[in-house]
Length: 192
Ligand SMILES: [Fe+2]
Image (cartoon, rainbow, N blue to C red; front, side):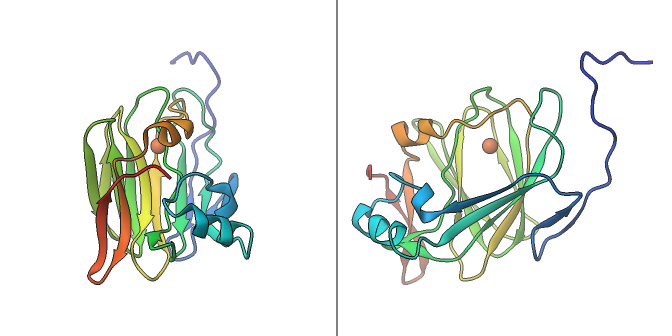
């Protein structure tokens, strides 16, 4: 019999609906509105107008009950609603893992991008249903909806990795995804 340093949670059967991002049994649900994304979009005038106006939901994160604890492997489904702010596509805040550990994203619905930045290099992975994006340790990551329907992905990550959002405010993400005649284009990062 293996001795555990801390009692693990019980094995779980978790069902989810990719079309609605519902998870059963469910855990915490996070909603990020435009007003929660201060300092992230390049067009601050448009951001302020939107955040102080209808303040739309930009994305939600629905988690399973697996806790963010060392040795556990939590999961969540993020839904980024379609739209843009001053031509810059709806996106997540982006974060770095304070405890550098890898993570995987699996595309579920819609089309999006996984933007990665290690402080020097920028990478972009086109995401779609059935695509796994691998995030290595030490790479900050942000997801972007570049389509016209909800972009959803499943994330699976080490429970002790943590989320450092300030890192992105301090360092940027190396590039921005802007609406273009062909869909999207990546533009060099300029601070907001
Ligand atoms: Fe992460």
